[in-house]
Image (cartoon, rainbow, N blue to C red; front, side, top):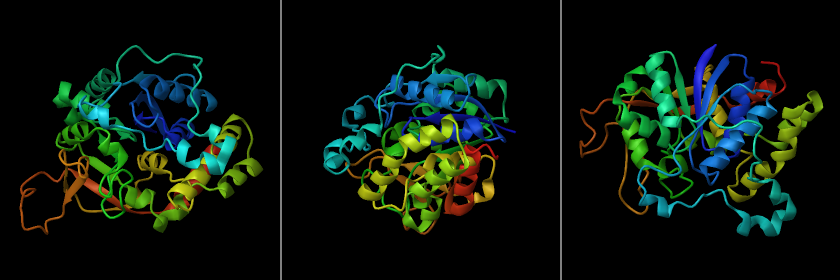
Length: 335
């Protein structure tokens, strides 16, 4: 079993990651921390997490609320969730759009009273070198934790970050991806902290070159044909509209599984191929480039990254078919 803490902002792919983590036989989900990103509020993110855990039959994994906004409160005024497509897509999908990002109902149990950053600090200090952290939303919680206790950087077994883009265009600007853009200060602290990092960028998640790893209506049909129960019913009810929106709006072959892919690497590292370690830094300035994830591969004339520690490896290839088959099997209780 691999001990994992999952940090989410509770969008659609985060939901699938929670189900995956709760049901996978090799993942020991120690806790979930929530950040305020695509879900709109920290309360909604936390309620979504608790409700999804209940669907998975998990009434034990604790959920910890994070900060209501990014580390830089000035920048918070510029945030506008990129997953609010109602005005653009209501004409096409009509009432079906009501199943997209629906407000969460109050869950059967409440989030823990401890704040997310304090929970992270406690866990990594109590169990140094034993716990992997997976962040699939803005890096606010881990950024705050590292700012408060920099010493935990050397106690995190490995950090997996779903974020950034290098060859595939970003989903906020052509060079920025949402999770990094939403709190670049937290990302900069994290990438420069000394934590060993694997970056899972849009390049292998939201690019049709890796469409075989995307979730489609065929996969939903497989779940319905070969399985039953709350998890299958939940996915079959909620996710057809996600598949259709990502095909319509982003011209992708299916719904991208960014967050579940990132979590899967904690137990199946060979699902991806990676770069050699490189130095990555985060741009904090510029209307178009604020939040850009900049990797130094050593070919530039300006040596601004020269001598900096090679803090990250970047996933560059995905065995999409093996991943998605494993995801479906996990939802069916076969893994």
